[in-house]
Length: 118
Image (tube, rainbow, N blue to C red; front, side, top):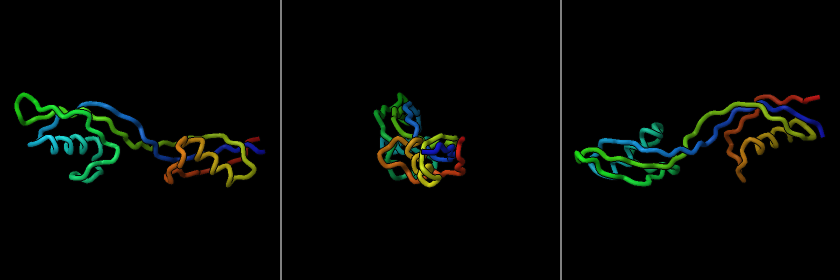
């Protein structure tokens, strides 16, 4: 087996928990307002798969809500990983599994460069 260095770009999901204070007319609208702050690219009137409101507490003035949440935020990552493989194609595949530990790694993994390490 040969050793290869693979330079890559990908996207990783990062866990995040916190509290957002938002202005809204109802608990449902408060959830969407908090979700919009964390996931600005998502549609404003549909739930985001990763966004989980843990509690929605009305504020003392009646126009604000405190939304405690748990979610996953996508961030771009680039790096270099070394793997053992018989050729460059296999090195790309092994690098994808080395970076993404999931059972089915996402398609966003992009091997930019593969070079054999002596």
